[in-house]
Image (cartoon, rainbow, N blue to C red; front, side):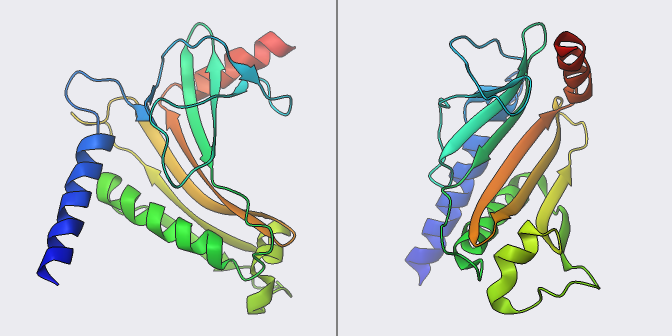
Length: 193
């Protein structure tokens, strides 16, 4: 039991050291820094400015990574998705990863605002309708952190974690926004018009 506690403490210390930016270091996630310039980007057709990429430091929890990128400002948002869990109508696979990642993010950013509820008028309230209820927007299962500017965090503004679904398929998404995200999106919008 004592060895397990020591192992958990070591893992927690490593995560905090690994994920928190040190003084004078850039901020971001998965080895991708906010404001950094990238090359050889693979654009995703769904959203202007959204590019898929392989991170420098991938997470064992996530499979696909993308950034919102504008050439003059660099990376302004970093997002990652888990594998898609094909028959997860109860949400068990997604919830397991969601809770693990939420605990890790809480160790770094403190308590976030949790939005884990079912709409009052939802008719998809059976346990086996978890994924379908998220897909139909009758249920929400997410946590959001608004990051205060500090000696540790000067650029990170928001971190969001949520369970997503299409019918019975679920996955978990995490995203990190820089404090210049709105400016970045305005520039991307003006360039696509």
